Image 1 (cartoon, rainbow, N blue to C red):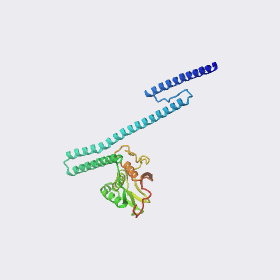
Image 2 (cartoon, rainbow, N blue to C red):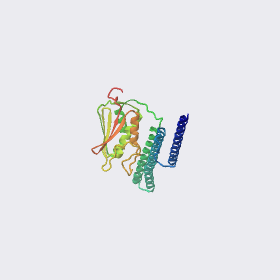
Image 3 (cartoon, helix red, strand yellow):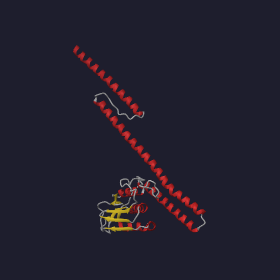
Image 4 (cartoon, rainbow, N blue to C red):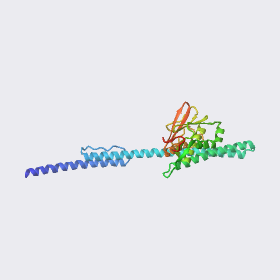
Length: 300
């Protein structure tokens, strides 16, 4: 009996010491969590070898690390958004300010020829502003959760021809011309007609605004490549070219929202394809990659 009592007493003492030690560990963990709640980024630690307590500590550290990552991503996204809004406001203000300036010059000018020159400049600035606002509207539409496409079997060459013809005046202004070469004239894809039209218009307009020479459009297999020479000294970064609001020109002087190529890739991906970019011998090449089942004269 005495032996049993002695064993029970020893066990009680052991349990008591264990409870005191665990209580101390929990108090230490509580104090560390208070520091974390106050803004500290310390890693929680314990001196205990108790597996459940160590498991709890590891789990809490995982949760805190995930929270810190989420906060960092949110903070970076918030900063990028502010930068994008600032850049967009600058882009919109630039042609608007220019238009107001030319309007004032036209009002003060008595020479009919010069007045017409100023009014033509106003029209160009307002057209730049219209293009930017249209791209901004399309961006909000394309990135919306309820955005839907209506794919159908389309012959590509006639649609591309319509887009080129619609920009004939812009080609004349730039003093350039398109060179179109299709491996298969009857090349067809499953795509939304208006979405594909917007893709072509954005790529052609991008080449006219930022390029320095004639535009080449080449179809091979299930790919269509748009290529044009670019100015020397400040080439675009192909890895960033499709980023939202990206511009290779740090002065941002050309009338562009920086959303055109972002919209191109978004629309291509929503149609089951993709868009790629690369630099080859002083020229920028943007390639539209259609699904592998795109083919020639037969309907898709």
